[in-house]
Image (cartoon, rainbow, N blue to C red):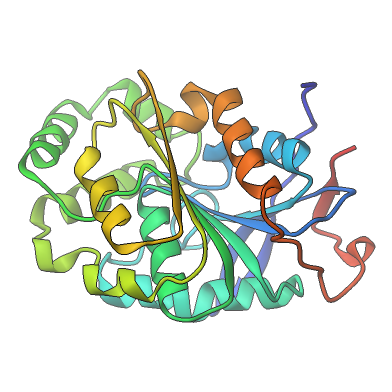
Length: 278
C-alpha cells in the first residue's frame, strides 16, 4: 500500500464554534465513514489512518475534532450526558448536513465508540458501527492506571506527544483524567440503550487494552444480535496504530460482505474541503 498525501484540515462553523474537519474522498465513493476520536484524540491524532482506510475500502472518510481538541475552537466541554447529547443531537447532524450525508458508518475509538453507540441508539440513520476499543463502564484498574498517568504527566512523553496534536494539550489531558477519576458507574454508558441499536456492529479489541477487558465485549455480545468482533493478539488500546494493516483488512472485509453503500446529495467535486485518494 503506497502512502497517500495527508488532507489539510479545514474549519466549519458548528454551533457557533470553528470546528476542525478533514474529508478524505475516494473515487469509488461507496459511502461515508465518520471517524470519532478518543478522549485524547483529534483530527491529526489519527495520523495517516484515514487515508489508508479510504484507500483500502473505497469509502470517503470524514473526521472532526471535538471542541477544544486539536485545532477546534474551545473551550473544552465538561464531559457528561449533556456533552455527549450535544455531539449526537447537534454537532454530528450539522456536520453531516454540510457534506450532504444522509446515512453514515460511524467508526468510534474508545470514547468515540461510546458516542457512536449513543448516535445509533438515538434512532439516527447509522448504516453500521465500527467500535475500536469500546468500554462501557469504569473499573478500579482503569482508575489506578489513570492515577499513574496523572502522577507522571509533567515532563512525560505523553505530555510532549499530546502537544503535537492539540493547541491545549494539558487542558485536554487534565479534563479527561479528572472526569475518569470522579466517574461513577451511573455516569457512563447506559446499558439499557444497547437494545436500541439495530444496525450491524463490528467490534475491534486489543487483547492487552489498558482501558478495557473482555467483559466489555461480552456485554456487547449479549445485547447486540448483529455483532462481529475481532481481538488483536498483543495489541493494546490503539489497534489502528499497533496493527494497522490487519485492522484495516478486517474493516474492509466487514464492509465488503454487506451493502452499506450510500450516495452524497451533491457531486464530490463541490467539496472544497476535501482531497481525493487516487
